[in-house]
Image (cartoon, rainbow, N blue to C red; front, top):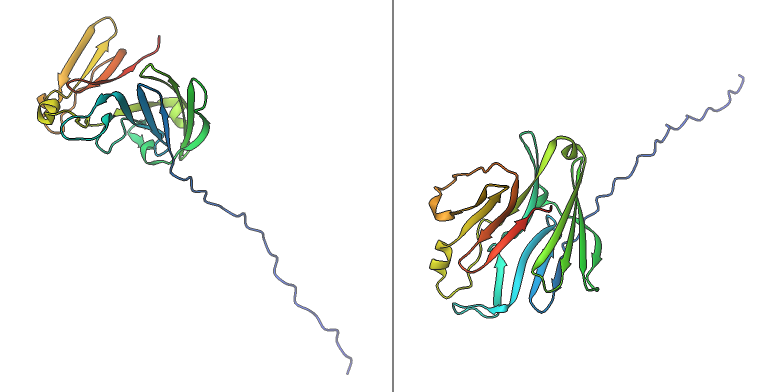
Length: 219
């Protein structure tokens, strides 16, 4: 017999698989304050959570100062609308792109991604002015045929001695360009009722009896 050479089986080819890493963005709260007020921003939704009014003492048995807050909800938050689809940026943890709170003017920039859409929010806080400038930039399908919606908190937490009277005064107001200002108390609405106001709007405000949170359009 003639010996046959041994044949080693060819090992199967190994194809390298790309590694996918899920990066979890940690929750973060940033405070920007001066002698008159303090703004609290959260990267959950890139939202303005509350404003502390340092010159106004809380009443009704509460300690500390008045806070403009939504009783758990962010004071200002953002969503996207494309057709009938809602892009819920409020449940997204944004990445803090810029955080400069050491100078006379503080700047905080957040970037949030939902699917193919990116929302960049830039907050600029001017000291002793009770004012925040907000710029928003959008990338993705939302930038082509969608809208950004700004959401107020559904209520303002009361820090008054008579909280019931304060809640009765809760309302919203707005000004349509060249048509004057109007306002409506929340108590006049039925549960689930909506009111749609055609723009362009010069400003929109959420009001309690003594305090107001307004959003003004730039010229």
